[in-house]
Image (tube, rainbow, N blue to C red):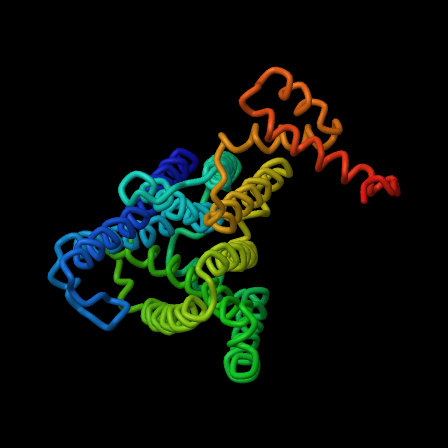
Length: 361
């Protein structure tokens, strides 16, 4: 019965995590469409300090979609392990990229398509190998987990590192080193996910009729979540304001997810009951998602499609074969004879120079 219940909760958490990614990914498209409509009307843009978007229904639809996604993501932590829910957040980037190519006419190049495919494959592998039984079911169990010496040491180190980065390293290197602000967001984010997990369990017990609001841990988790999320938003906005979004997004995803997986391993010890092949599969899926997100963002401004691939291969083949192919083309295509002769002469000249022939000069 317990095993059946665990699988049922796992499926609910998985469905909530995936629906969260769809809502959040779609929210960016709705907001962007609303802002573009305002720009066509000549209204002052948001980047210039305008607030006309508050009168645009598409923007509000995007905001509601994002709110629904965040609620679904919050609820997913109450049913499924953080090891599964957090990495699946990458699917929102995937949904946004695919929808923008259809509704915003933003081109998705070959690297982006490969990145999307890798992200889907990586997410599938993680779903197959992720732990399917949740270790913490009640608020009292959560309290015992939080009091574990291993987690206390981890949380203390996170707070110390964050304070050093905020007050010592940040003022000196935050404007020039992209890792400073992103690291602050990521390590604090690991604690915020733990708070979300605890509050999710609190809400489940509240609906079950238990007096969890009298438990001091409920309010401690809520206050801690507010502090952590506020810090995350502050320093993530700083990183986005200073550095390129295409660089910030993949780096933040990698460090944040790694921090959450580390925190989850220490706090919930979900890895202890996993077989070796499941652990390898989970890490392989995570690394595959990282590669996919990197390809999706790092090369998004490169105009490269599948149609360009044969051209590149032909150019390499011509260079490797000493332009024999272009010589053959010259005898079979009279209309391109002048171009071919020029290519042959330049190739011969380059070959002569490499061989030290004076006739090249």
